[in-house]
Length: 606
Image (cartoon, rainbow, N blue to C red):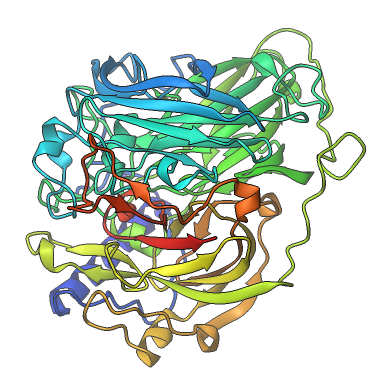
């Protein structure tokens, strides 16, 4: 097999990076923090050939032979049932068992209207767990029963939900249980999504199919033709969820990445070599030569993408996690990490009759991803233009702050900030995983999830968070209840930072020193498409992410965010003998990291 020059250096980088990690693991005291390289290392090209280290070698699949499925829509009310189903990802693969919130994979696109509260009940009727063998019993809360009777809980990602409806990971339901969530739907129109959020098995349940869109409409963004914003609607508004997966020859999912890790141990991430869009591998979408609105959800477990089009054509970003931007952003690419959403306008009138264009991914591998030999995923899906005459439609330039438009977004000012916090993302060697070749776990502030050292915030206040990432691997970060503005990102000399204030050898002692003396260069402003309110974003490797975090007030919420959550009689989880739990969570949204152990609780007092 011949390797290109790019592929050779990508593979060489992978081997070198893996050697560095292995040497660190062999020499480290068990339980110690993972030390960084001496200097920040630039991102590396992904390997162009499957690595013998990994399972990244799905069976050969023809690309762009299946039409993109249009996800069914339903009102955001009533009952959804999590169940085991049979699904075919691709005509070249046999059917296999998956999970869905209806009789299929994924869940219906739920629609709600601002100001109209809804109630959704989620029933656990799963009788076959398609990823039973991947349950990791070293993660807290995981048991043998999860293999045959998995726990579930549902989180509406991006919504300020009341405590008992947020999907707290410690409160879950097994077969026959019913979770009832009440949603106020008080925020502006936005692209939200719902997904499983159970302790220790989120990565498996979401990978198997437990996720879906939740579109919130309002009087401006109605989702109908003739809406005040002039946005495409009906057949021209298309929710698209992108996920990467690896397949076995029998059509089943391969949840493991590294062959050198023993079976039954979670990985540092799940990075597939096949793009799955709306539940189908490498689909195509026939389009008319006009303007489309693509509601894009980056639903992968771990991967970060740099989306672009194969012909370099430009497109327009009109919104992000928490709704519309003030002005549309013209760009030829967008970077999205796990859990982020982007609202895109794409004008296919630029294509000639019968011409095709491919949505591609041009992201590089961070150093630790190179160590894992994360496979490339350059192609996502294809759009095929019809033969009809073009119907050009002008994308709106202004989306807020004008006559008949929603109000403009207030400037991201630090006036009124009541507190500044330093939060650290680091890796540790895990004492409970000595059988693993690389017994790693993620950590926030050097604390486990079940710590007594819980942060407290005040509803209705604004804070500054400096999230310090000392590991050469990017992390997505997601805050429940709060929303935030990105103030900037700045590179960090992690080795100097950790040498000046070494993390404790014990996991459970807070570690969050000031990173200021070890910052490198100037702070970079957020990308133009990140200018609005968000709930999920990328923390780059060896860098500090600075956020302006706003906790909504009790009056805005209409409920007490500090209300205790009664444990329902039919719930099953890691709540022990407690009759109630309290608080919200924030965490890394790399689902492998979230499960072990990059998640913290925060108490929001009214």
